Image (tube, rainbow, N blue to C red; front, side):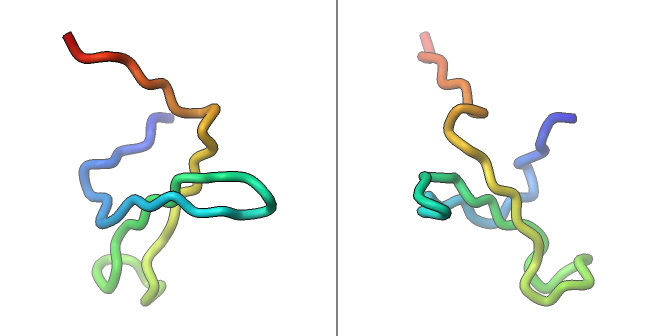
Length: 53
């Protein structure tokens, strides 16, 4: 399904395994059982950028 970014707490570009990714951080210290929150990694080919009119 689609990734809900409405509760994301941070988005940062990172380098991992020789590629650039966007790391999205969720739920730091809140509902998540993991104290470091949870993360989504997006490769740039998963992201569609469209101009805004």
